Image (cartoon, rainbow, N blue to C red; front, side):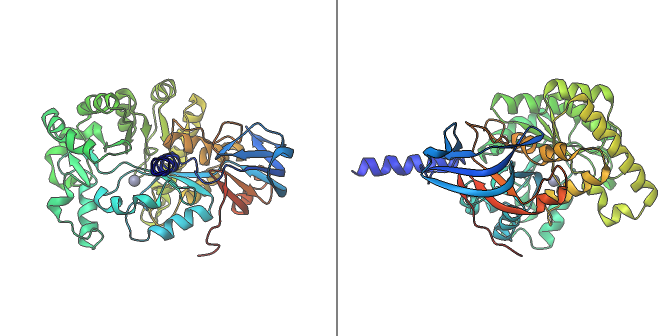
Length: 417
Ligand SMILES: [Zn+2]
């Protein structure tokens, strides 16, 4: 009896850890629905069992939910943020994501010591599924050291000092010897991937020697290939912060898996066509974070703002044409990817169907490449949103969420802020 109970608990935990939902083995049919298949809605029912969509006759279900003609889409996703991973405001952030239909979140750096006590609040049928990259790799004086220290001064990292932020919230890697020495510590904190920082790497030599560039520099670009090789050997993907078109080039050449930004958030940057093609050929995914140019400090210089915006449009068209998979991410800690999608819409580059993909399937698969996400088809995880109108006609319908189903379970969320 005791062994059976332990085995059952272990199974339940394993299922929850996979995000597939442990609770219900009932067969539920969602009928009277219009389901997004690629880029059109098709009238059909969805049958769910054990947290997955199954190929079964709706008449065989033990329960039926009538969706009154709602439009069903894969859940939305935020590929780049930092608003989860510490107790401060955690539940509010989770609730906001769920309200907005965002079920998958990439936290592209965090302090594991602050994340550990609340890890159980993620990756359940009632919460968002999140990955955490922990502290990233940078150079002496590089980003994000200045930012981390200023947040420390503002009291955001209780229990930390400048010294203890180092080799935890970031790792300084100036040489292969540093990489050798620090690697066990980096992987010992069990990141879901490795974050690296590239900032104006074309100017690395000059910036490295110049302390006035504190926080505005990153890794020695020659260290990126060995970092990528080491990460891949351990089954860890590499996510690269980039600022310039050259950073983008360095990242793609070195074989990173995900580029965490479009370049050009401070001044216009244009990705080389050859780099876009190579990124597509290698399956490198790009997180957009294009809304970063909308920050008031960046909009004030209207000439520069307009030039950055024009460059974003060119870069997005280039990447799309090359076949690079794009994922919506905002990097705005007080916001979510909803503002990124608003910004991308305003740029006028994408159709509504493309936006649904960048915000939905493409984003979810960027964060969780081994899971079956983003399609409402048998075998896939049974997660979807039911919208009150057709988002291909009126994109505002993405705000009119009538029902959220995650891991086969209907979700109750806090309705208003
Ligand atoms: Zn970020």
